[in-house]
Length: 620
Image (cartoon, rainbow, N blue to C red):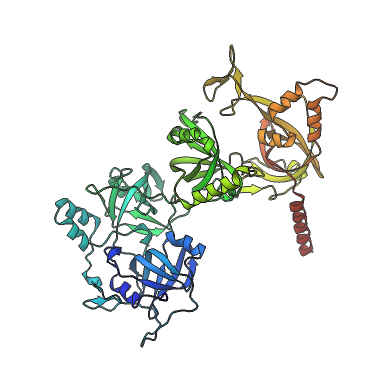
């Protein structure tokens, strides 16, 4: 039998706008027409050949659209849905909360001749005592559905008056994915997965207080709820992490991207009249963790932004636990760094703190030799070493998760990734205060521009890119320092033996050497001294500080130490530098620091020159 739409599918949907459960529905197969992206959502028209209904796909199905499983002119089976009225309009929207693809694109739109069809878009269903679907199932009309709030639902359960029958009469609990600002009454069942502290604020209208919670339903969809003043004081103690609640009488609005902490187009506001009831007599649920992965090589735009990211990667290394002292309260907290890689052949360092460092971090250290796959949700992107990731209190770490992305990454790593040449994401890039991660090809200037502008970096560091040569490395300067093998901070020789680290508060038998040196950089316009730290200096010199120290201790007519420094000069490099102002002997001096050093890519440089020549021609 040829695949086709269900007869009178749209009429069936309209006659049963809020089904009590998906098991009560007949098979509803519709054709997808006019599929298009609108903002972060995919819109389409659902058609049964006679009538059409405007519809929205759930975010969980976006991957099916991108992969081509759901196509324009294709068929889908609707498994769960809700119908919404648009205020001040007679039109209805179909919010599809669950569906599955049935067929790829057909050759043409399915049409049936229907008299008086008009424009084809249904605005109001017929009000009849009963409506029969194409499958012959009698459905209740809309006016028989009784709407009740979260408090009424809980009151009936507490009284234990035929709860199953009572719940069947109430309006069903809606999934978070189906909510939008145009809906009226709704009830949701959610778990509190993150709770913020009560904060105070002051503005033109006076003082107030506010706090936020992150709510997650059984499908893993999240939304942020905010409460102000009376509502904040009313619900702050009521919301408890991990507990499940029925919530109703809240309002939704488009989320403010500057402050949102979850992946949702909307945010919720609860006032003092909102109803929040704990689902005390029901089994709690563990929300499904949904990830929205960002490839490692695309983390740059998120540097120092408020957006949180999810990543998946193969663990390359795990550091021992370090003790970090907070500047704010002098409290010591544990920290552990893990390095992960993905199919982009880039690596990035993820810092785990507190319990994550001691629990999950220790587990990863124990199995590090097996190169496990980790999926991490809600990470902050910082600019340490170009780009770095840091866990926060609500971060979630999953080891070898049973998800398609992790399986695909494991397959890649086992087949080719473990032998591939991986590069740190920080290589060749450095942070800029306004535009996140910037390459060595942006903000290109000459050395004379920096030297002649003595005011650069007065208020905050300024970032530029240079192309130049190392013209001189002073051999008798202090080129390195003794560093802790755990935290890389400076160590001092202990009385007796070993080295003492003030940061880790422990004595170690061994230490490592890390570069801290000054080199002279020259280009066609001039030269200047540039401060260079460990990773960048190692790229310039061509060996580690420990290796150079070994060469320095060797005697001979051809001193290998001097030869190594000589080989490092007059080699072209691309530099990403920061310019700041330092005060020395009551005199302000300009300090140039190399944040990234990479070899010259002559093909890329040629393209850059051709672009500059094209711009010159246009200006003439």
